[in-house]
Image (cartoon, rainbow, N blue to C red; front, side, top):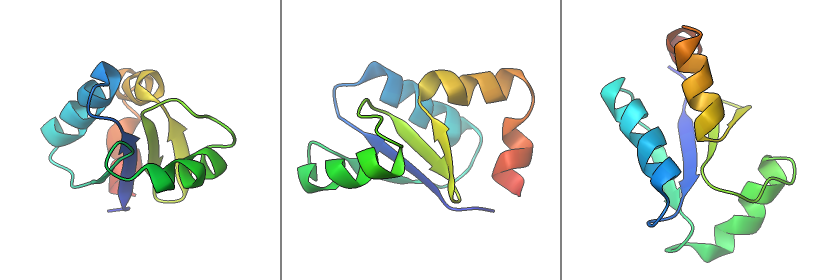
Length: 85
């Protein structure tokens, strides 16, 4: 299984939805809360190709995008294969 990282904030409903889906899938992930670690925001923006909104989700070295993109992968039945790779 590839490592999963998700940049979040505590007050973001989309962040909560994304982490809930990953939890329901039974995968472990590293959550980087930008309110607790604001110094990591520049890192996120660089890794996400300039995207500054949260969540920003990475599976392995692949940038997935945000919550909408994560759920689109789930609806297309592509998320499980990506998580298992």
